[in-house]
Structures are given as structure tokens and as C-alpha cells.
Image 1 (tube, one colour):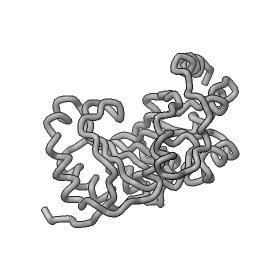
Image 2 (cartoon, one colour; image 1 turned 45 degrees about the vertical axis):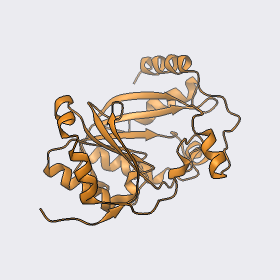
Image 3 (cartoon, one colour; image 1 turned 90 degrees about the vertical axis):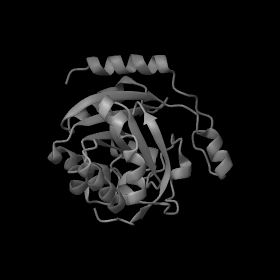
Image 4 (cartoon, helix red, strand yellow; image 1 turned 180 degrees about the vertical axis):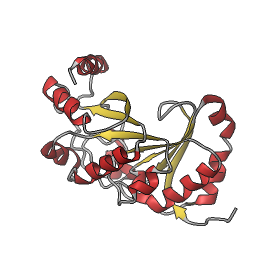
Length: 241
């Protein structure tokens, strides 16, 4: 097998993840993100860091956990940041993993730089982060247009790959039935959804903003009550299609 010295910027690798896809997984966090979500708890990954790992080095690390993947039906999940911003590196790594029959999941907001068809051909599961379901709400929450995410959704639909939906529930933004109804309608645009998860907004990243000297737009916002979040989820699931 020919060596690949292409480099990427990796923030960290979680070796035994249990929530980012089925089974036991290695979760690779790539740096860089175009979005500036007001509720982001990883602002240290907004800017792409220095390249610090080659394709060969990353694949070698991941293959050490092959027995755990095989025993649990797990694999590797690429997250961030936004992994689609390091698309050439990501494609190169995924090609190597597929040669080893490793299952691959992509945790993404769908805001990359293209080549979506190529990367979707290599992965087995899309974990899609929904920020907001209308143009103005998306722009206010992320600082960016939702146009790129819609391009990615179109590519997902074309690919036929299964999708898990994740929706962070922020108090005062998503925590009401009007938004639930809009979300139900919006998700009708996305094919092959297998699972929908609501995640309550938390304040675990607050100190990071202070350490980095960044303005935190949600400094005074209270965390989402997990019980209310669950009640909203149940109400959402009971809404008619």
C-alpha cells in the first residue's frame, strides 16, 4: 500500500466513544468551522489549527481499535469543528479505512467546501446537526447562510445514505411547539432518516470563551432543562407528518 503523507489538523481523538454512531467508535475531531453558533461549546476549534497528522499516522492509530469495532458493530466517526472543511484529507483517510472494511460515520452541519458526492460515497452514516429550520433563524444563530447546508442535504438525499438527526434545543429559540412544527416539516426534505435526537443546550463551554478572550453571546442564558427537552421530543414525535 502506497504511503500517504497528506496532513490534516486533528484536535483530539476519543478512542472509545459510545454516542456518536452505533457500537464502540473512535471519534476524530478535526479543527476548523465556518459557523459561529451562539451555543457552540468548542470555540477553540473554529479556526483550523496547524497540520499535525498524516493520513498514514491517523489510519494507523485508528486500526489499533479494530477489534472493538468488530466486536460491537462500531467504527470511526469524524466530527469537529466541521470535518468537511478538510475534505481532501478526510477523503484520503476514508478511502484507506474502507480498504480495511471499517464502518465510517460523519458528524456534520453540512457546511463544507464541496466534494459532497465523493465523501458520501465513502461513508456509512451521516449524523446531521440541524441548527435552525428557517433562513433568518439560521443566520441569526450561526452567522452564516443556510444555503450550503441545503446543498449538502441534497447530496445526502441523492446518496441514499442513512441519516441520524441531531437538534440542540436552546431555551427561547427551539423550545416551543411552533418550532417543533417547523422542524417536523423541514425534516420531510431529508430522506432516509433513521433516528432523531434532541440535545439540551448546556453551558459547559463557558470557560473556554473566557480563556480564549472571545465574546460569548449566550453568557447569561440558562441551560435547557433536560426534562422539558424530553417532553418536547415526545410532543414532536406525536405531531402528524
